[in-house]
Image (cartoon, rainbow, N blue to C red; front, side, top):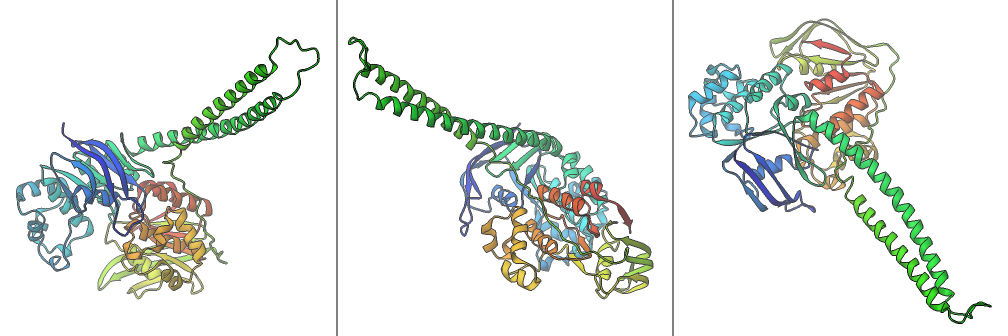
Length: 497
């Protein structure tokens, strides 16, 4: 069984104040199926690029095989080419029969290889990349968020495919997907990187137990330190008082043979020794306390202040048909959205979910039938696209007309370090960009919140925060999302297109 060894890995970006990784060491086996977990911006993709040799670093990374990264990069000029020609650029030594074998396992017809890449759906593009990736049998695979923008059916297919593979690191924030696909978990914590056996749920159960133990131990040590501080102060006071009696006359009736000064000196010495012993135990407790809580993820409660609407029904559609260009993508749709409901739109990629949302928010979409959206209805919209985010955070706040103090506080609650506020938005990770859009929406007082795939790239801890937010405040929402656990926890009404 071959191993990949990482020793004393240290890395930082040239314009960064802090190390991304510092003296990190661990070992993994090359036949493991590793789920890679960590909060947004903590360095997951950076670590994969270090394995690929794209950055200089201190320390050593020793591997018995090459690394291969997903997703493959495609130049804009190449997207109009046939898939088979693009594969040649990804891997000049590929064997077609192996790629076709993997495509068959992914339930993709080999005929797609001879179509322009840009005409394929997102799911088809993802599956072709995975087929090329797993056709390379002499590589350890680095799979970076393969499920983003995939519908539930596509996620199930890739889940079933990866279940029968091994020898990879899988970056994903989809808890259901991780549970099904991995047998070990690699975690970027606040203070270190750890490796543990099991799937996500097993790791999460262990983490909750460890965190609860550390919190209880922290409270116990805090109380012990306070007690020892008082005891040491009292012992020191007693020792000083005894020491002060060494100078003076002997008490009346005291026998001349008794050396009172020696007696008092010994008593003072013992008091000082007691004080030093207490202080030693106190320093040990302080040291133990300092080793606790370093990896506990604080997830503060998010806030939302929705507007109340004066009617029970916010959105109503009857016999609605929607068109993408001249192609009908939605037909005979009937919807009624009431105050306080969370409506999930389900359907395969290309079934018209985003088209329906765009029509509701007022974009010019060709339609027949009836769609009733009151003109007084205030809507807060989160797009699945983050590519337009550029410039400074302050400029974004000004253009969005939101409260900057509240906006930054929400980002802090979603694990933004203060240094991130000085960066350009285009330099944020994909997950951080999505959090910017979510924080903006939470700052907006609206009757209806429409979120289009809000969890793409969002880390697991923030997903749980958002779940808790929706369960507590119960805003009226329309959501497109394919995270199964998220849907199971929140779904009240589903419309399948």
